[in-house]
Amino acid sequence: MVFWRFLSNKIIHTKVQSCKKWPVWVTLGALRSQNLKMHRMNGFLRLWNDLLDLFYPTTCCACAMPLVGNEECLCTSCRLTLPRSQSHAISSPELTNKFAGKVVVSFVYTFLKFEKGGKVQRLLHQLKYKNRPEVGQVVGRIYGEELRAGAVQTQIDLLLPIPLHPRKKAQRGYNQSDMFAEGLSETLRVPWSAEVLARAQFTSTQTRKTRLERFENVSGIFEVVRPSEVIGKRVAIVDDVVTTGSTLESAVATLMEVGAKEVSVITIAAAY
Ligand SMILES: [Zn+2]
Image (tube, rainbow, N blue to C red):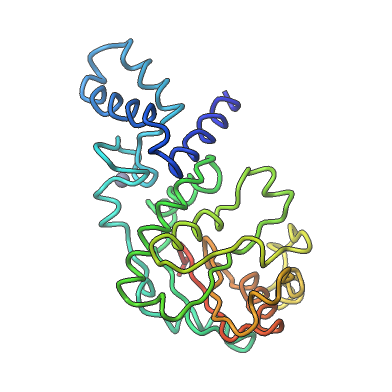
């Protein structure tokens, strides 16, 4: 079962990137949409739908309702009504203050407001723990469009996702922040790279430490692999959630030390 889930998501990931080359999956999706109407009528169809769901997930990643038509990952209702954070289009002092006294960030933009048990938590859970990398790309594309409307692309030269430790990336199969950065890059039209910022050590004991201890612990965990790509650039660090900010602080400090002109932060959600 785990193997099938893994295989199906690998196929879907390919579909998201090159669906025109795989018309068979579009066909399967159309079949699935038609079948939804008859879902309760026939046990065989229900089984068929369950089978298709393995290869072509057709429920909304935020509300779990069936997707219809051209909807991808998010239903239209969630796409329009997911709770935007206070800083989704205007940098919030509340968030930039998280970094105050440690490092200077130019701005912090965060797309959605995280609420425990809410739709945004479900969306992040699907992205991080349910092997659905395409969720990050779709959310990134939507947020990129909204940021572009506010001309944020004129303030950034390069998007750099926070890297996962290689061991964790191997377990998950992908870095959710890479997926988000890829989506953002597509609609914001700012380049991104997973090859510039690297993680140097594992910090699994971080959650048991105080804020000060955490900053000390994480400072120096990142390294810039290609400094020439950062020097004099306005870099935006991309992550899934702003929590304590200590990991982000470390990344900001590392990039500034190397010679970035400005460093800012863009995330999917913030818990505040
Ligand atoms: Zn939905």
